Image (cartoon, rainbow, N blue to C red; front, side):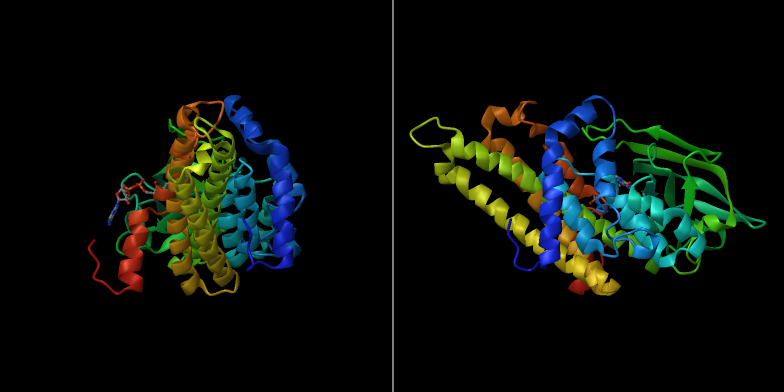
Length: 386
Ligand SMILES: Cc1cc2nc3c(=O)[nH]c(=O)nc-3n(C[C@H](O)[C@H](O)[C@H](O)COP(=O)(O)OP(=O)(O)OC[C@H]3O[C@@H](n4cnc5c(N)ncnc54)[C@H](O)[C@@H]3O)c2cc1C
């Protein structure tokens, strides 16, 4: 896809990452998943090239860029068929939150490792009884001397087994009820009382999802990132990058599927001309290309606003970008599978598993309906229904 709105640096980054992605690609990822492993080689090579920490501050080993650059990296790896899901949580959410609100000590402890890929961090907000309604989360932090003691449950948390720690969203005992005043805690993987159970998902990804139990997990005072009274501002400093990165993930996957379908439609001939000559095949592919381009434009806007420090405008744009990218991805994958006919469902052509995978971008991290609720209420000023 071409883009006139990108700087020369961004275009250069895009093509460099695309070249890296082409060396790995879908076959590499499929093998890693089949072997039950993780894309460690790609992760560390991308990190060594400075791609994983491109958004983190230079003084802590990052590239000094922003979410605009990080989203380019994820989109291009996805378009090559080998997206790295943990980029959405480790450098984008956790790295950003620590860089913006962490203490000097927390920054020194975590950012260099997140930037060079030697350490990763997962992110846990979703709870079984709260779901889309984050205001209902009940994971609670109680003070005990200078320590914190954390109790609660989380669900669908990605990559907890491979992450060195998980950034857990809870609330303090004093703010146990009412609107959410979130507090963020770094919980190390092997902390006592921190249990995890893999969820059997129909997703062929390297990163697994987990149900977590926090059973009186004792944390030192400096496990708290930022201010316990800072409220939603700190949380959304991480959630807006997550939405932009989910858009990048979806656009990359949509582009991958579309390219496969276009290649197939150019070659496959069952009448006189290749099937791509039939408008019933060509038009939906053209439509998908347009939808992916439009979604990317919104993603670029959201990243630009976020990197400029306009958190409020970035919030609206990030929601819209996530919505547009999720819908464009689902439709592109659906049409790609259809374009391949029976081959769309074979393992050899590798598109069928994307039907499930593409749905993730419609559900997580915030569902299509919750974005429509946000836009109808916040942007259009319509009454709230829930
Ligand atoms: C593969 C995967 C990875 C994930 N990784 C993480 C992770 O790393 N960390 C993390 O914290 N979470 C993670 N999640 C969780 C994800 O963010 C949640 O699944 C998502 O927020 C939706 O919550 P829910 O599943 O409880 O759905 P629910 O909230 O139960 O919603 C179910 C359905 O009802 C609709 N709905 C709910 N409320 C309304 C309303 N008011 N109006 C209209 N419709 C409504 C929703 O749109 C949805 O279609 C992951 C999920 C998946 C699938």
